Length: 128
Image (cartoon, rainbow, N blue to C red):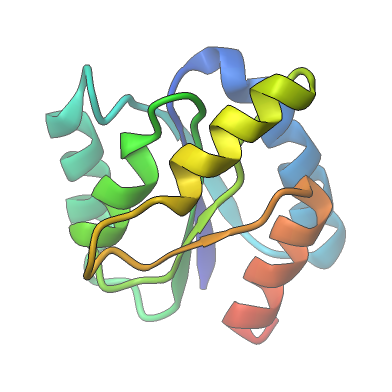
């Protein structure tokens, strides 16, 4: 049972830290990677392949702007994907939320704006 966090870039680490602190409080095991679906799709697929045999897993994706990462993970995995887009201000928030909400069919991404709520949602999905 674990959470796998995939960030679009290492610049998303401060946002991820808000999630991982809560996961630590809840006693939920996690691992973190930086891999862009646009720039490093093979690396993202490798992360998914390395976790394919897990029994209980939740992916958390952290990407903004043109968020292909969340949909890419959801389309290439059978595990739940929570998108928690970072943002620096209200206009950035609107762009990042919309790019995370707009997914094609058969790519179920659950969007959670607040990092603490994202960690709690992952905990509840895992039944921890």
